[in-house]
Image 1 (cartoon, one colour):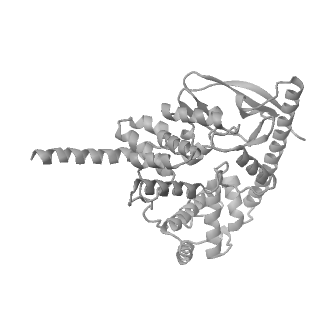
Image 2 (cartoon, rainbow, N blue to C red):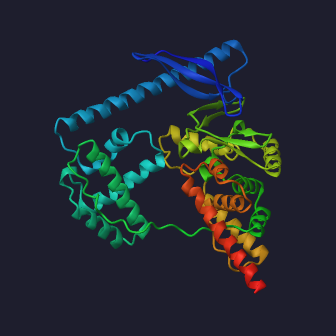
Image 3 (cartoon, rainbow, N blue to C red):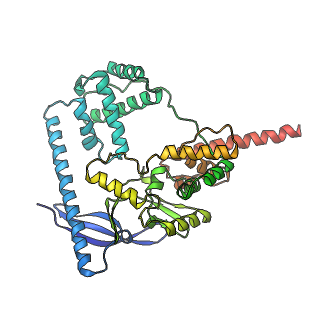
Length: 411
């Protein structure tokens, strides 16, 4: 039987004393009432007409009730699999992928789930679809040899073995297996690409070479430090014209206008610390306001109505991948902009930077200009201040070089 769901309005106090109203679904369970947010009231487009408004609310509640039923069915399936495990039935590596996702580490980001699945599939190709209890420590060497033989990078080999070690550690903790066969595997030194910090000249060159959409995206990225996914999932309701944008979780929903019925894409920030309000300079605010006036009415700042309709059509047809690209050819177009700026500025030595390097540029500029470390950590949404401290280490090194240079001149 479908649970009875109603839509209610609740208020929530935000940082700074601001009160925001949210629509919440409420339903009854044995342990009491349960709630789940639909989103800010202003982001839920309900008709003004009372009858149409009531009908719209009923449609939203019915759709959510179906979603709850699907979640319960998935939970029952997981519990059934767990019961089979506890009764002594052993599990194969191919089945372990789903078991790990639903039972050992649920509610993770889709991209993380894909990385787990990729690591297990590499293992299956290397050592076969073994039972978990039959996997030995020597199999780690087999997986490493397989990946190296396929020409995979050292970073891919390291990540695959690291993922498997973490997954099997959880299986060991839940007593699915006696011990972790990957526990003693040497992963080697962590491999990371060198930082690419854009100069003011390069940033100005890219902005000048780009069209309006990319001008705003690049400017907002290096003046706010937003990650790519955070930036692309920004909605107009997350923008405060006083001078800030809000990064927070989006529940799956619909945004209805007179002409279109558009999806609100379900999305989660990277970590709990990633949910934050980020200050942006006046110049960026003005660019956002101009873009809002020229926009096509999409609820998103950087996703057009045309793209939202295409995503919605793929989702309804069951063809939408878990890690789909919100904007097609994003990296290629960003590289093209860098090439155009390089040619215009006549800079020969311009190694391509990735989009994340704009975030690193923001962090470096802030650290160099004396923004306190704890404030920069909050702005970037870093879980650990150790990550933020890396930018200050580089600033300290450059300061030391300047000091030495002064006394060298004196001598």
